[in-house]
Length: 322
Image (cartoon, rainbow, N blue to C red; front, side, top):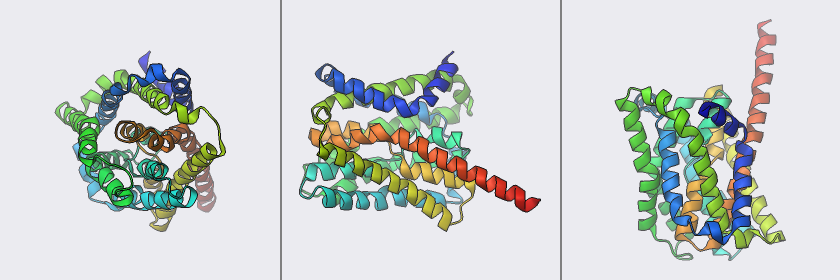
């Protein structure tokens, strides 16, 4: 039954986050009071995803690190700089909004990218390794990027943010991997059917809580809010395009290409929202929460493009063989 529920939730992924944000906005203060639960729920989500990681797959990926290096370049150098540039161009002097854009771009790749890469037959081992390395680096990279690009314009408690990322992401990930290693992979079949559906429900709750916190900024439609949404969609699009571009330029195989595209375009947006709500004024969280609205829908669209490209390539190969 739980596996059936999980399959249904996978199909509903593009709708889960927008619906959860709508619930959060409508509930407002009654849900915002539960903000303290977000880090705990997120730690559970990270643990549930990390039990699929194995040290052996991780070491195999390190033997051919080019796709991994390309992905980290997109995630933590190219995209934060592009986000800062677009933020200053579209909202000059609005340092809270600019910080929100940079945070939305600098946070680690999304655990849910694993789902999409699996659906479109990408390199699962590469995806899990990217998630693992990016997760371990997150407590150092995210505060570092924000300190470098935001500077003194916005108060940043880097030490507290590092601690939060460590307990929300690094510790649950390492526990999941150690459990995988200790059980020789048996934990995946034993626990994943139980954990996966509850993990997705936890994501929906986290999104709803964070939506409630920024509800006052989302309730009233305005041209400014439309502009924020447009920049967030543009940033996600650029991330995916960089994945397509680098995979083509470096002549990566199809499986590595799928992994690079999804991991370059998706973000651990729930973690970003938790950080934004916990450590910054509410306006910083608005771009990040808007990212939740569009992330799964964008991933669905990109998956459609990848699927068409794959089918076209298969027809070309068949014609050439004939």
